[in-house]
Image 1: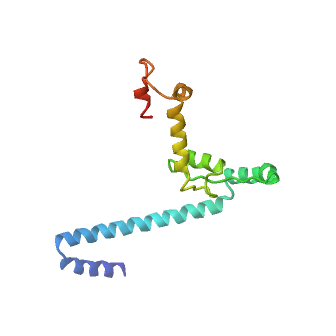
Image 2: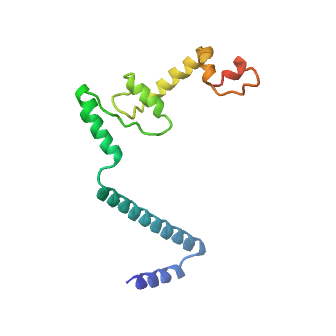
Image 3: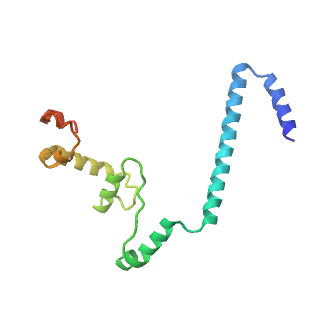
Length: 144
């Protein structure tokens, strides 16, 4: 059956221009890569299913039972996207919009942090990474 498909594909390719053959070849390659990726994901899912609970799952279950549930607390998953620190702080401050993604309010938290850094450079400059062999002027600090 596969040989028949390939023969049919060869017949199709004979009628195509060089550019079209190249595009067809690229599409087929992408399709094969997608199929491989889907197969690999299925294999990983099967391995995880057969492996039982992970150490992380066990740890979270125990934390929930012993500490979180009795105190009416939960663990919020914050997506690691470059804004996760600001999303987490905004969520803890009640500005996260009710979900861990906090799509709207991480920007306001980032702005508040930047404003605080600029307004109080002496408070934060000991924690900034500068070349300590030279004195940092206000002008050099301001872009941060």
